[in-house]
Length: 441
Image (cartoon, one colour):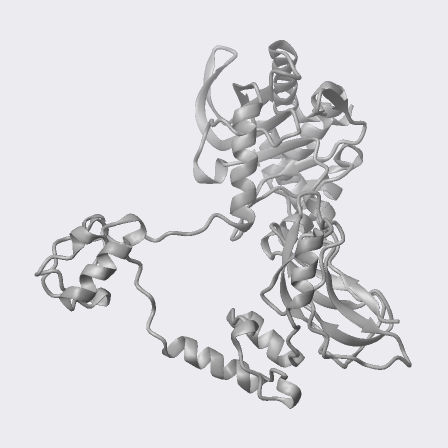
């Protein structure tokens, strides 16, 4: 009996994914545990492995298809089984509710279309409705050339212009070509007022769109949608308060230079973010009440210190998590962070890379930002914003000297932490930055 290929849940927030590429063609052998296809989630592009040894018997969703998690996306025929590639039904997700009797009867009444795998893939990629395609293969089966013909017809057909029924009727009566009319209605839709005797492409009153210049609309999807939802939830839910302080990072700069020289031969590089993650992990160890999450009506204080670091990628803001940061030395932290950032920026983050954080750090110093108000990455209770390191004249021991200063912005959730404990935590970070030798104690 063929083995179902299931689209697994690859993250806490994942409910659907887009099939990017099938790595094996129908009829080709596959091995259990080897990559079978790739999917794009809201955070990364991931490989999904074959569940069994055998031959890829069928593909239920082509490349570019958006598929709910736990859906059957294909089948693997075990060795010795008959290979069936003409299966056309689209399986339901495992969590889908049963169809009501009336709907089930209606669905059974509709004959299923026979279609070749290559034709199905082409139709899915081009957005062709196979129900409207006439099959010329054996017994009316839809083959690749049928889909190609449908695609050609779609391209040849003139695009339908958006217009109100009244405007469409008036244009027909007046012999006006709607393709030459600029609409001023919602989304550029043509309304009756747009149809004047002079309303042509060459002699047209300026529409709202032309007055404003070109307007490009982009659907809020994928990572951008997740970011929007999380940021809106954080802003609306948390009782956020931001504390700001300035620290003298001159000694920390000396430590960074010394560490870079020590490990240069090993190919290990160190940024200020690496050192600050190291310091924050120590501060969380000293004051574990900050290493907490608010889940429902319960405050969860975690033993494991898992620090997320905000990373700017082409796909949007991602927060890879360094798990067990409190038990790592600065070299281990630097290596772990480098690997996580590389995977995030290349779209190859693993599911566990982006979940399970207990505290977050975000650094805008490279953009010459000093202080800002970072939003809490719920359900965590705090986030630390790092500003730029800047040389300033500072009074020390009644003398003016130039020192390397840095600004920290700590946003905390007042539902979980009071102001004084949060201030003590920020003060502890300031002390460790100014006296990094305390990290050795």
